[in-house]
Image (tube, rainbow over all chains, first blue to last red; front, side, top):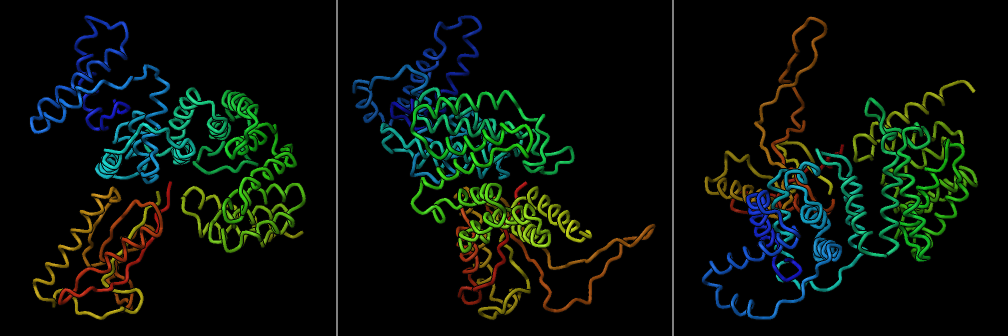
Length: 376
Length: 131
């Protein structure tokens, strides 16, 4: 209905009424094609609702006299179209996320509000403003797939707050997306999410403490997700059009592939990081996270001192972020410089913006400080 | 979407940009205008989908600590240094960026004071950690 030019609110109301009607009618008379039935009834409701609005009657009659645009019957087309609407570039990221979860994910406003720890009224307002922004926009253009991918990744990274696991929701949406587009980056993103999500059972211990990758119990990793992630990634890479999600997925796959942390194929990971930083002309400013990740790989392949020199390139860009200090703490520790590691971890803890990371970094600082106090 | 607490203080913080009398000494219409402005801030934040919470605190404070085994909590209401911070209330917002939080705080700080002139009050902006 949105595709045919209806606005979100009216379409949602009409569909709601059609669903109520279905609850009443279907037990006695199940339809042959439920989708078509719902669509027909909802459209009829929409027309009824308009007729009731006498002030707009003339314009509506004019509209309904126009030949209807051919409506696609393909479910996939509709999903993609709806994603493009929800991730319209005129919307702020928070609105794109909220509208996508509401209109494509089918979550309730309450669930979305819970997931982001804001009052339900605030989330309702955000969604209604987003719909209002889209009202009257031409929505028949193909949208920007890169924005859709970014929004899905935002949802994935918003994590596990509230009653709804947003990471799983993002995976579900990305899987839907890969069914309707051949773009390898869509599959790259799905693979990346699966390969990272596979480790989530090991990422937190029984006491809720964060466990870093090199200390995780790898037997807890979800092998089904790893297998699927690798398969999806291989099919994406076969298209020979690499992009950042495919590359990040390849790095995640190499971590997942190591039976023990010591067996991680760091040279291979570094090669992928080289590809990642080569995607942008000025990676230090355009993709500092990639440069930082590469610095850790350099630390493993060429030695901690070389890795630390790589992080120096990010001074002035990332040195007020906890990740920069955390990475340097890790590299100092790798090189056996425990006092410097303790100091870097402490600074990282000071700058952290999430409680689990802060707590983890405080523990890291205390742990290496104890080692530096030990007689050599 | 980071969340920020924008804290208003009864006292404390940097040297005031513009000194003013306590509110109980303002003209009645200036007090009304001030409060109407702060209500308006809350409404605008609700409207923009950035509102999380807004509260005001009484100025009465009690410091309390553990009294030791089998002892009652120990309290004190002073003496404290005259310059110690005293929080008056806050807005909690869920915004796109740190810059947006500063923009909101600066707008709050333009609240009307005596004679309807902006107060230029210092506000303390603090990021809330995620879980």
